[in-house]
Length: 327
Image (tube, rainbow, N blue to C red; front, side):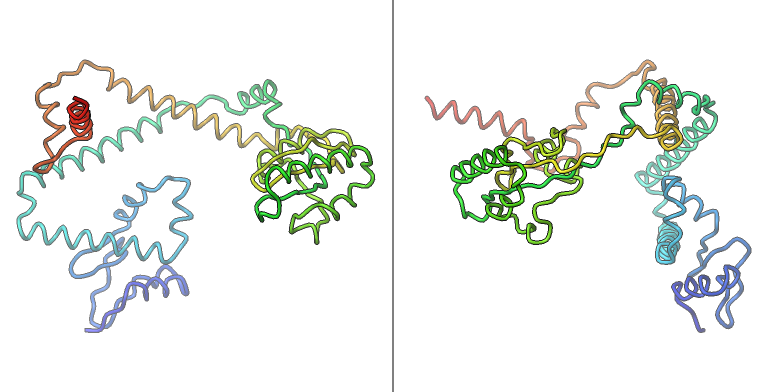
């Protein structure tokens, strides 16, 4: 009997149509309605795939399945699990006490997830648009787009070992003094003193100098400059010592509400639902609890191999040995 690899079906489905995915090899029975794939007597249905997809965050599902390789892998994994499960039943492994308990726990986990999701779907949501407007009005400082800061800088590097740290600092102090005395000659200082490898192309000019992409102390020094032509104090970073000159600074801009509305609403909705879900699950945790102290304590060593010494026991033994050595 001729058979086809699942990847062949996947490729065929994406090249032609979804209907062709169910094409069967010669002498094979056609797949039943709703069956995605079959192998060695087991089937994967759309419901199986839906159940597997439920384990993926809803926002990520579309992207996950928009990939032939992931679809193939998902179907093959389900087929493999079903084949192994069929083999386990044939060998009566489902009668084993531990396996039966694991099955019960799997059912319990699935039902618990279903109950939580059902509760989530029933949560009544407030008007987040109005709440977002109120939040925006009271927290406009959170929605400020920093203006672009452009600087020129001299780097007296320490990484290439051309200067000791003290020599580099002394030279940087000299550059700072000369720059403050003649800020209009800063480009000459860049050419004369800077050993930044990029100066051959940018001549010491750095765009977006205060952005988070820059080394923190460099960015902070750039952000502290406000007047065109202003010279910074010497700044030390992992690369060496810097002296900066402000070339241009555009004003900060408060982003309009329409630009940030979706982000605020999404964050509010998530926080609201998370809070309600936490309250819901905490109702169960807060109910009266009975426990067997001896059995609970026994779990600390129940799964320990013979001769196992816990970190606490090892530490206590070490202290006792040190005390004995001191005497």
